[in-house]
Image 1 (cartoon, one colour):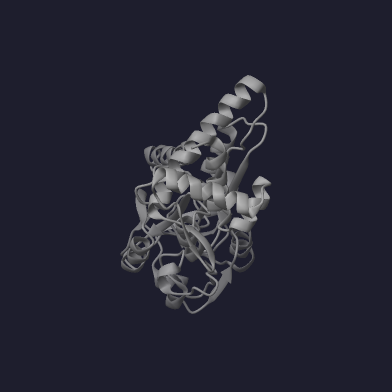
Image 2 (cartoon, rainbow, N blue to C red):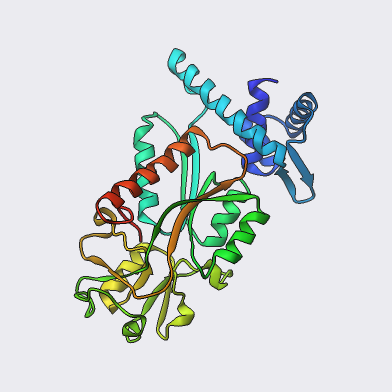
Length: 312
């Protein structure tokens, strides 16, 4: 087994295609295929499953690649330290619902790694794509929530995809709205008080099942609905239309500004925010640091009487 073989296997897993991987590592496809075949024979495992639609990583392959990537990262650090030349860019990808705390933790991890070059990805996307990204190795970590409404359905999907949910914190639902909203001075808000105002929720694309909603009280419960794709648009509609959304109650002044409030909602449910990752596959060094950064923010926020520093 060689570092070159590990690089080839990593490229195939990342690309999901032998032809694309061969272009990435600058070798012919037959050379790449033979290197992977030799590696699998030596280790006596099938790292990849081949089909007409491409290649997918097997369960044994997931465990192998987790170790292989750690070796490649360690080798890159040694190379950079003693030669001044990095042979592998630090890599990490996370897919999340539209949570500002996930962005803040990502920023913290990037700043902690003072590399001259790196290859990181942060995807704020819909729930179904978060699950698919982690299951298909496009992201190491996903960030989403469970509640009474969605837990049964999402837990079945996560189990089918062999993904694990790790709870980060539990919060009661809050109404997010602008400081100038007519209900802004309320100490608590009942759902019926919101009937005259637009409910702003995140569009989930073709996957519009209730359990994919990013809001604990989905649009079906409201009579005025507007769906958006990003947090900036949502914030603008809070100000321009007296709109609102339902979230965990944690506001980031850095990312949301000082004019967005979170007021408790009188609603019998809880929001359990956590990360998802592949079962029985250890997180990479950067992945573990990212998870720790989120937990630190959650703990710090709880000590100040909030669930975390930020959310929507």
